[in-house]
Amino acid sequence: METEAYVGEHDLACHACHGRTPRTEVIFGPPGHAYVYFVYGMHWCFNVVTAAEGVASAVLVRGVEPAVGIPGGLRTDGPGRLTRALCITGAENKLDLTTASGLSIRAGPAPARRSVRRGPRVGVDYAGVWAGRPYRFWVEGSPGVSRVLRPLSPR
DNA sequence: CCAGGGATCCCCT
DNA sequence: GGGGATCCCTGGC
Image (cartoon, rainbow, N blue to C red; front, top):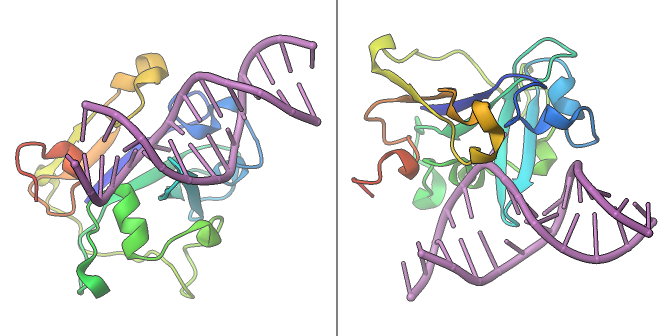
């Protein structure tokens, strides 16, 4: 319900902007693999590598809507919340999400095109001209959208 | 509003 | 090869 695109090595907000390192290697790898990183000392963020091998692009998943109840009623609106609710950690880093075992991605119903909104990405003010690019996408009105986008209607 | 927490990668020896 | 600023965030004040 909410994602952000990181579009290549030249994108100064992308972790791969300093080239291949042990951490960013997976982003340069084949598409369909998970890039999971630890941030702020306590949260995991889940990304999906999207471009062909050698091209460093990925999508950060910032919010989802559960199709079934989450044990404990954990929330899934927010990048750190959804990884906690889905038990995604560094153990899933580099995982091939196109195979059916374990964590995987399958096609689902697409949201109505007209309900998709876009705007600048979160927390990338340091990225110069890239900070303003509208590479964040969300489904308007979805409860799976992170609170940063709904400051006036906290839940 | 802001502290917490640790990996990462600058940039300087 | 080591110190330190920074960080694709959240919960609790």
